[in-house]
Image (cartoon, rainbow, N blue to C red):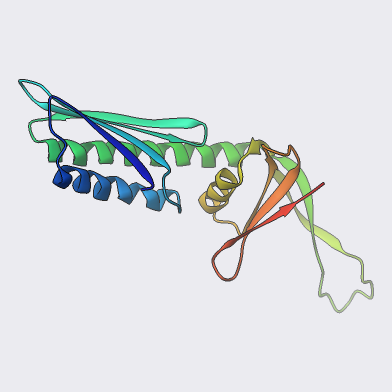
Length: 178
């Protein structure tokens, strides 16, 4: 986690509590493939129970969960579980939206038919894509969600068509149009 801001109301936030929170919330980074930039955590202690509230702003949306429990550490565990559920639900929704809407593009493949004497390219399959404005990070997330090696999108900053792709070394590349 790059920047975790922890506040306590009616409770002293100990280093042990900070470490535990950072460790548990750090597990959420595996869903994004990169460090989460900002996390806001608020601990509240009442006469009956203790409450943990976590807010994470990510790519134009907010992940937020809160949980009340007698044990603050148990509440942290429960909040992380809720956040994981929200992330999975969002990824499923994004996957479904990508599959349902798209534009037709032609992907040519060279035929290897020895009976034909022509070297013409033949389209053997057409695929539909939904091109919507998004950041490079969101495009990479979309690409990973659908399990492809590349993803075509409209760059939200330049408003031009761009392509992110997975390189053989496991890193990502970007092709921009002008």
